[in-house]
Image (cartoon, rainbow, N blue to C red; front, side, top):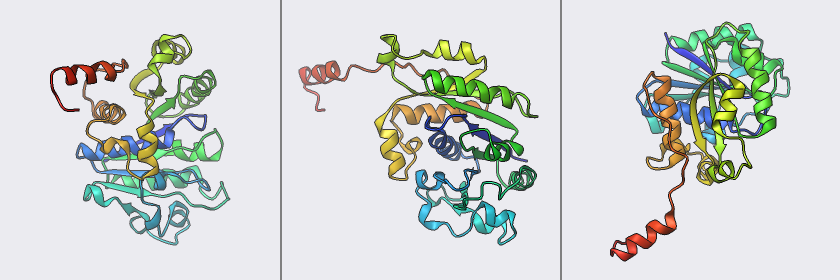
Length: 267
């Protein structure tokens, strides 16, 4: 029996879908069988971030309304053999096309075949949120170091604590260490203290994450990128490993280049 984890935020624009894609990809890299489920009906994006948008035939609503079986709607990510699949959201404008009890039944069925179901939750607390949490066993709340994002995360945490799931975990996304040091951005300790839930990961702000998402290649596939390592470490913590948090200090590349040149090392 697999485990369903809903990735939520409350506020849009904090990198929730990117986080869903990269956690799912990281779990597949670690050898787990994963199904990504996009529950953002009408505004699907997870397929684009995964680079699978051109291979969709059926979607979530098709499954619920009986037009196809689950396995017919699943899109296989061929980069990961038989480990990573996507169930895309529908493009219909009817946000009520799926009900929470239908979503729970669908997720329970997927649990029979996958180690992890990663549910990408829409922004807000309306029908899409209710659907996304209906079948979840655990929750990960994504926020950024902005007061409005932290406030919305706090609200979502309050709602999640009313659900029959394990206490939610926190991912802080898009940290810029130089702004934190200058006092222009909330720091990790301030956010964790305010939200009062366990921290499962910190992801530094990185333009390469956006570039990778635009290319349909989750950054987690990059063996050396710092954000990629952060996402893979989050996946390892989900698997129960004890992994220390990355340092947010950025290496001084200018000094490093000068040293290499001084010692005759090509850069």
